[in-house]
Length: 312
Image (cartoon, rainbow, N blue to C red; front, side, top):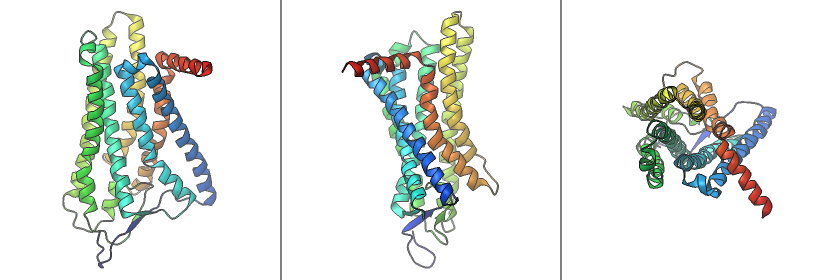
């Protein structure tokens, strides 16, 4: 936290989006709408699962409802601060608030990787091992899986956050981002940084690559099983579910990989903002639509919920 001249870093400045007053107003209106819609969509999914006794017992929907709650938390870790900075230019954020956001933001991102892996495991067991599925994916096991995703997700980044927070910061305290990001924090830290940048890169890339490979292998087995199935209706239904899951995986991992793995070039900072904006704001808004538009069970449960509310 100490500067080279002996002063202390008390705050950072988030540059955010470098646009004029009119541009800030348009972005404020647009991102407010996106944030509100994202919260509403995911809240509706949670309400549908909680109020439908049948869906609430099914592992896929237990995972989906927790994933929706995760998405609400994930977008909330960045959107309110971003909207505040668009409303009141300056971007000043305290040292401790910055590292708190850094920890929550990256922990939720790690948890999302784990939840996508858990959902891939659920589909793998349901389609590739249907006879053993009820014995393996019990509600208790499913809740244990959910707890593991949350716990490991929030344990993974304790060390990187602690180690970066203990660095000295010299020169500029300006972060060219709309969120407190590890790369930006390391870029304004005083050398020597030792192996810390490599350590942070390995933590991020390991989580991304390991979970992505697990998901790819799981869905490859699922697709192979569906191709072999003799029941056409079962195959079509299975492909519909898998295609929705793969769309969500592609949205998330495509943008995350573009940002954290193998990046280079002078325009990296701007590209990083775009990619971060996509997977922290737009993906959580699109995911509920992708999962539920082609899901007849969710549609039927929603209609039952609406009918119940009308009667009440």
